[in-house]
Length: 305
Length: 274
Image 1 (cartoon, rainbow over the protein chains, first blue to last red):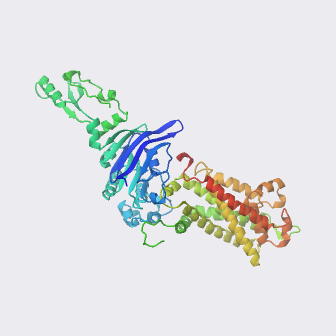
Image 2 (image 1 turned 60 degrees about the vertical axis):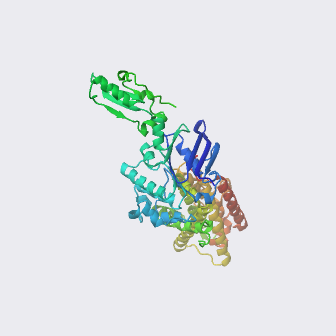
């Protein structure tokens, strides 16, 4: 038995001329919350659909809970919960009827009433599905995803279209499930979501993993250096990226002979790291403005790896 | 449900099929417009045609109304099976209800068992309504002999099953749920014109009748006329006889062919879902 919930080696998938997944490797441990992060079209959804067993792959090895999803049977399906972006539940049934009915499909389901409470739909349990709001439907989707008591829960962009309050409520739900020991894999293009939820995450770009690790680790590894900002003698804002911010500030202080006007030192956020890794922001955009000429030769950091 | 000795045992396909059937019927009944559409359509057509054409058909001892009543029962069976499944499954596929089911450990057979129960219950209800209207308003006589009731039973069962399978197969044709009703209703409407539902077989050109004879509806109509009309009316048939043997053969062939077609073409995902 493997300790990993998901193992993917060299996964490939093409749609006609377009290569959606191009030699992707992933290792997801049991019990962790894993975030797949990337811009639209990076191959996140395709990867998750292959993990679910709903899409055939063109190459590579995939093992989910010790089985190949392409050929796994009913027993395997009962151990994997799925929450899609765009599913619909039967409109004419009530929340309670729907959850109780789906519970019947599984060998050892959770208690439907408890699951309805878990996702916060107690007040709506006798409402027809068609009368639910969008956010409430997503909660029902999650209820149907976890009703079988899955060991692994796969969520594809679960909070797309949520308002900030609904998103935070949803995060609480995911944390609750994670605390119960469910392995959770979620795709998102919201970086804050990945940072708030994921124990580890992988950044995907053009069908490949370009970075993988704990959020803090990624920030440390790919977001070296700091940005020092101040106001120059001519009143114009100055900015410089440096690996040695203390030295830069000391030099600045020596030059101005006291307080440096408008001084600000910032470390890169995970978002800066993410945007640079996925090529949505280049170093040219980022370093813009003053190239640091006034900072007295502070060394620029190498950004790309 | 099986007992608790082996807690990890997966529930059986048959018992889940029963539950799905109950669920399907509950959903159907709650969609008031679908209920009205399904049940009222054949009744309205029966009322229209049987009221407009009601003269006695020469040399046959039956009225045009009686002919229509028998044919409309056949059309009602096809409407609750072929038409309602063809549309509803296409919509369920488009709305990804099917894909969600496929992501659960539900055995695929349970889904189809559930549809069978739905079609059986609605088909029986539809037939009962049409027979009620036919006997009360349009002088249709219920069969007097056990042999005729037996013929009715097997024509109903084979016709309903064949048309249901054909409906499941045709549900894969529409590109979206929205286009489903036109894709499914048009061929059904054409068949009703060339199979002896709307127009008596004596007035349909032979080649059109031959086209209709390739499909189940013509044989269901013919068999049911045999069940509900006096023997004297057999002269109106193409062959001058009810041809029960041929009816059983064609309907049986459609059950087998329809099953093969379903197994070959059924998709859990929409075209755009790859």
